[in-house]
Structure formats: structure tokens, C-alpha cells
Length: 310
Ligand code: GLU
Image (tube, rainbow, N blue to C red; front, side, top):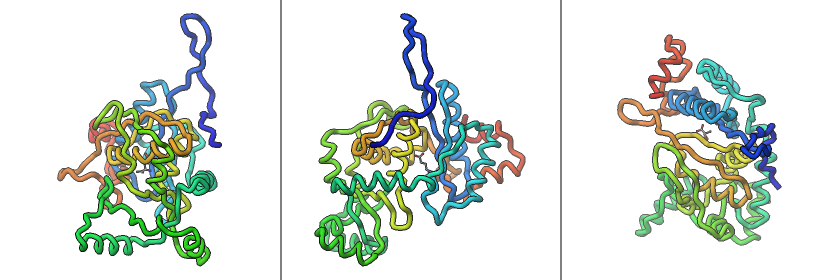
């Protein structure tokens, strides 16, 4: 059973009746991945988390999302600390580093496997592409997820138990995927979340089915973004998730995993994205100017706040 209670001290608030009732402080987190230098988009997210935590009288945590052991490096992680210090951010220690908690993610995955809700998938990216192209050549318009990637083909989901065991025993490279149909059935109710961000607001209906059989554990990393983010948010007692609008639709998957694993659901605030002059979202892989470069160029925190519209 996963402990969803925050471990930190609780604040006691005296009500009019003078009876002390416990009230949890709001808990925010900034959760960057050390797979490249932080840019202005990260600065907006980090500063907004800090501003909202301060105005709510809450706590701010920093979480290093480094499950991708090939792309995440100690140098990028050191860069994150340097950038955030320059932004005058103040976060609680110790910092949770996901690479130190693979056994927790594995335990959650094992529980889903034991319930028949996850299966091993063996197709490579290239094989998926070929399969989808063949299906579409036959006139089937194969569905895409909200990020535009084709849903995972049904082949591995439909394998017999014997076949699966045989392939696993042969040492074939595989990821673990959620059986979306069975997962939706297991939850059996419509899911939603509370949203306060810059896009749609209020009670948002979750639509996890649009993502198909999402990855829970990658072939090259012992977890996945979706699985580790919901576990950590619950384990760290996060009450407010503040992150970019690019993750708005992922929240549907997060709500489903929270329901399946009996985890608490935070409130979500998906903020606008920082774009370049052509309206393109900034990204590490496109080599957009990093915060360190701006710092070395003589910009101040006030300049950065102004550049991100805070
Ligand atoms: N680690 C993710 C990123 O750097 C953010 C995840 C989240 O805030 O939920 O994009």
C-alpha cells in the first residue's frame, strides 16, 4: 500500500470555536529533467511555482526527474541548481531524485501486472511505424494520441500468456504498457480533475482512452514519466501541480493511474508556454538559449521575470 500522507509537520489552525484542527499546507513542486540546459520556459514554470507557493503560504519542493539514464547527466543537474539559485528560488532539501527510487516504481508496476492491467510490448519504434503505414495503406485511419503519435498496435496486447512468457524468457527487449481497455474497466467511473491554469478551467473531464496503451516502464529505463510522476506527486504530498500546457492532456493518464493505484489527486494549473518570435514552444532539443547563457550575458532576475511575463 502506498502511503499518500505527506511526512512533513502539519500546521494547526485555531478555528473560531478554538478547537485546533489540522490543516495541511499546500505543497508545490518544480520537476525538471536534467537532460539539457534550462531555458525561459523552465524559468516561467519555476518562478510561477515559487510565486504560487509563497502566496498560498505553502511549501516548494524540487524534484529531479532523471529516469532516462542515457540522456540525464550530473552536469545538467548541477546546471539546474545553479540556474534556480540565480533565480532566487528556495526549495526544501533533500531533493528527490527519481533515479534513486526505481524500486518504488517497479513495485507499482508489479501491482498492475499482477492485476492483469499491464503487458510486455516488443515492437520497436520502426516496427510500429511500418505496422501503422501498412494499416493505413489498407484504408484504416489509425488513431493518434493527443501528442500526434499513433496508438500502440494491438498485437502484443492480444498475445497468449504462453507466447509472452516465451518472448520474455528469450530476453527480447521490451517495455511494459498499460492495457487501456482493462484499466478503464477496472476504474469503472468517469474521471476528472480540478484545473486553474491558462487554458480550460474548472472541472475537466479526463479522457485517458485517447492515449491508448501508454508506456509504464520503458525498454531503456526502469519506469516511465507517467508512472513515476503520479507516484512521486502522491508520495511527496503534492497538492498543486503547476506545469506547462504541453502536459495538459497527459493529466488524463495521470488521473487514471491515480485511480488505479489509489493515489491522491492534486489540483492542476497548466500555464501558458514561452514561445519564440515564430510562436514555437522553446525546447532543449532545438537548442534554445539556456538560462546560463542569459545569465552570462548579464541579464538580471528582473529581466528574466519581464521576459517570461511575470
Ligand atoms: N519532468 C518534466 C519536464 O521536465 C515535467 C513533469 C511535470 O511537471 O509533471 O518536462
